[in-house]
Image 1: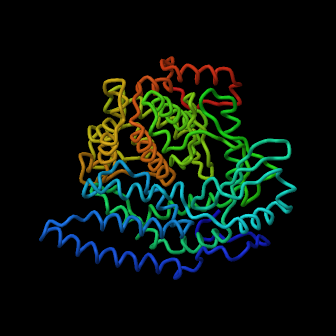
Image 2: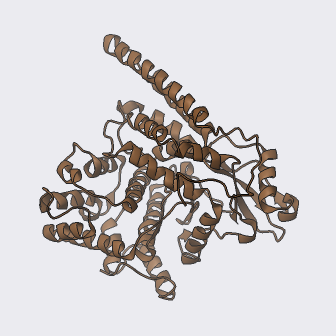
Image 3: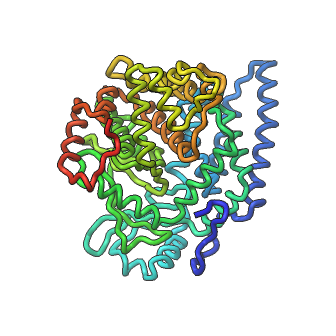
Length: 484
């Protein structure tokens, strides 16, 4: 499916009156006006602060609220960009005391997007299913459980008593996203503007990042694609002791409606208030879901914002939203494991050779094996430093700077790094995962956990449960691509 050439399928007419702006000018103009207004105010506030020492808190609060409100009502690709940026909580803001202001405002995009009216939700649902709501469901809650960038979720009950969650796509969102994707410069400008709030920015071209984000968003528009992804993950983790993926109800799912088992538990905000021991267990479950899926299946659920997690008191985690799944070739998995193995062994030349073989650097690049080794080794500190190791926001910020800063300690290695297009998404996954673990202040024996993927026996309690689960499954059903 082409991102730029996306259009709704013939015959898939959607109800009108949704309030989502579709035209490029209509969707771009508010951001242009707000950007110009913000730039002017920032100059005045900055000058006033230098001359009088005046507090600029009010300006930052006002700016954050303006962007959050505008992004929330824009939905589609623009809102998705704001949700993605809300994860970058590990990068220190300028000034530091204002970082929570922007993070709190943007984080609301994950949970509090403006919903569509119940009457419109009913029209879309019945249009997609081809029957009345009462015929498909015994009960239906029209007050949404959650509203996000592309659709909103409702609780319902089937006629057999099964409790389900029904995700309904906003009508017109496909056309709105189509308008956004034709205006890559708008997304790039938005990314640059919001990222400029941070002192240590990722060394990435905003237009390239915008194109990558656009491609991923287009994939999420077809809920049939998401349902197929989720069904595969649900099969792989069915009855797993601490990783849960809800089952999809295929007969009540279409391109714009997705029905699945309802999951109830703690939200991200609730999880952050729980005891550290439980947060550590959740963090390990998330780590094992991400890297275990990568190592065993060559597949990763790439949308790692914490609004897609439901936390349970027994330490298990339910994973939602599989619209953006990254597939990784088996040889890439093997090479990634090889780099990790050589790096943790302290083998400088081995790490460099494996990095050249996978194509990250060329042997002719003016980069020494020591520089390549340092780029990897420092990034893996949580795996080789004293264990158990706590992943803090400060650690995650230093990790991001070391890995991506064009002026940081790995500047020369980064200057010649060639990352294939299918690896760009993995970079976003790593940044998002580090942010989630950092907010949990996760403490674990990460070295022992990752050693399992190199043939060592599990040590942690969850590791033993995970090992027993996969040992009991057919090897053809759950292949392993990570033999060290």
